[in-house]
Image (cartoon, rainbow, N blue to C red; front, side):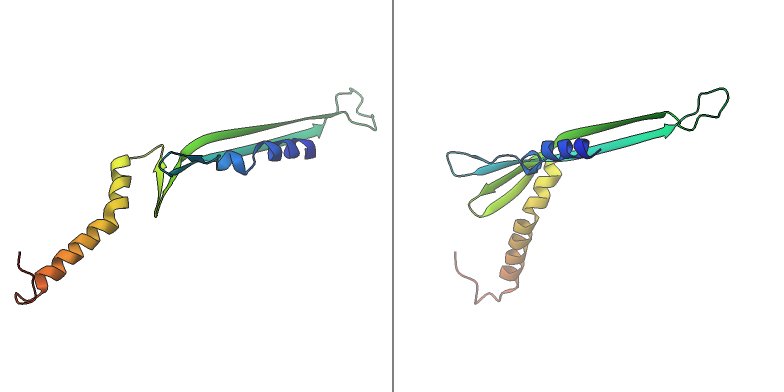
Length: 125
């Protein structure tokens, strides 16, 4: 079991979960992000197959298995002062709306403040 666990540990390192960064010509850095799932099982037992049942040593039977799954989750995009996670699943329109929500709220707040100012304070256009 120890050897199997060491092999799994070697396969699943940080570069599997967060991939190597790629830099574009405009300075944007794109980092792939993955989901890694590991499973391990082992079992065994001693079984008496003799007809007389007087054997002092019982034969051992056992087995083990392991599995690793790597699934892409998205890409972390880093620009000048902006960091975004672009998902490979889900609804991209809804995610974009969540990304834009703070900017929309700022614009609404600015419009409300402009509207609430007295006429004498508002600039002439």
